[in-house]
Length: 627
Image 1 (tube, rainbow, N blue to C red):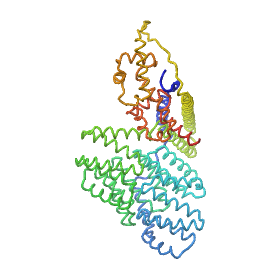
Image 2 (image 1 turned 90 degrees about the horizontal axis):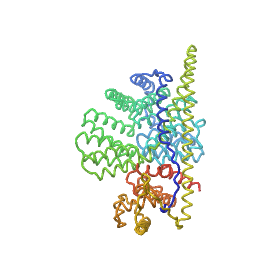
Image 3 (image 1 turned 90 degrees about the vertical axis):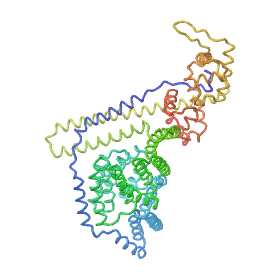
Image 4 (image 1 turned 120 degrees about the vertical axis):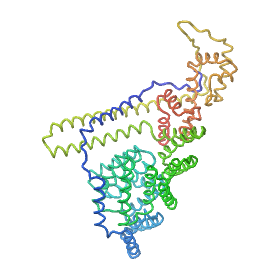
């Protein structure tokens, strides 16, 4: 072939079917055995939880947070050393839902005192507060930098509460950024530690992380289950600080599960709590008003929804709760749609996308863009539809690939296996007469573990094969780069059809076409997304039939494969040589070599190289960083 680089085509590994089959098999297998492994938990009704909360409030009615704030404020200037640091940290904790600026000032003072004393507990607690306040304001990346900076020095055996708070916050950041596999892994790891240590505070934080994860995935039943489990441990610890959040979460999940009446009763209970205890602060109050607006929106009470939403947005803007803003704007846009104001709805969805981009909340961007695509289609703006679809494909490709989906399936499966094993141990201790049933369950567990191991082995082999393909691609590409200026002799071929040789065109005409074609290749004609056989034949001043015949004979492939080969070969060189280019969005990279559709680009690249472009770029970046 006479293309610029003659990259060897490798045997293609059809792993997609295997991956899909493995995932389907795991899900079906777990579903079939779920009835054997799980017993229905004997948890209190939601009303029962509210009764327990009322009892806790009556027992701790003297724990008024306003009085506590006044007392601590009066004490802080009269104490020194570690005691002063602890009081400042308590004040930061009490203010963080009321006033971020005051909370941050107390925290900075606590950090300064702790560092002066080399008081490690105080330093780590202040660093957590710093990361949390950044999270509240939507600075997810900066918050994660603080967490990662302390990851190696904080362990759960020495600093159990601080460790649990950091891990909970880390899981929440992963969830908000749409990195669901990492969020699930972090939450499950924290839950494993909590169950091993039987630490109630860690248990409450682990369930809080998993509740947030399942809420974002719209699995509201599981989110509610983890919320209630976490609430159990909060009540046992007699800590009223997180009660308001939990009541709000219960109300929101009841609404999402279709029980609007239960949700409104929960908010009536919330208002009663607020009256008997204290105001939880604008951070929690803003999300409560948002959720109440959402409920009244779904029941058609638009005026009440509007009133609550306006109060929520006012609180969010006044306190710079950037974390809350994208969802508040989404609800406002939905309200505009319900009241037939499509123009305002579109503008508000666009504002929500901008707010989500400011905090890297890619899952919110993705859901908003889907709605915008539909709205722009309805109002007859096809350019805006294409623009949003391009962005949607890029985000979907960067956030949700097969590796992450499979990772989530495996993590869920492992957790279900562990839960089944724990429940079976308890069952054996309670009733020895069920030994036969236990043996059957253990056998099933072993089968799941064996199959899980098989899935992991297949997955590892798939990854290794991809790495081999990647390495061979790079080696061949580097070899071709070294011989770039060397001419590769062409080999004439005959086209046969039913044992009859097709008459080839005149050699002089063929040579003229080939020379012109080579010149156009050097001018990179193929990166034009509109490039086709007729367009190219016009440029070469020949007819499509002659051109097709020359490409078939001299290039050894049909026109589409020829164009794809030129594009991929050109792209491989550019990716290898230009680090800034390969770190652009995948949709941009695809468009730069003539692919407007990301799926077509992925298919062409994988057909040619045997691996997806995202995997190739990832491996290339990793090797660059190591080198």
